[in-house]
Image (cartoon, rainbow, N blue to C red):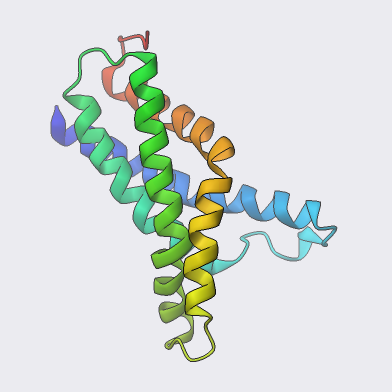
Length: 152
């Protein structure tokens, strides 16, 4: 059961790491007044930066949720808060550095200090958006793992 939970978590993580940057790209460029039909996949750094923490955290959450019989709604919100904060913090700081190294091969023209400061700020400021989205994703994962269980 726990191995299936981990595999389902990895599946949700992979799908989420493909879908979330796509919609982020479409909405962000649309709000900025940009012409979004030129690129259908968005910026590749965002896919790389988000995929590692999202897949890893969903695998861990799949393991955890597969061992739980009943998760209260309040507990699910706290789990969502913690997971989304860690994922957005990792994505905004270390994930960007990793994607910069993969895409460019070095950090010569990269503002490391600014990236670290603004990555922390963005992860805190965007919590009102990321926590409900994370709760929705974790609820889908929990329902998929438990099938007949209901979140109270």
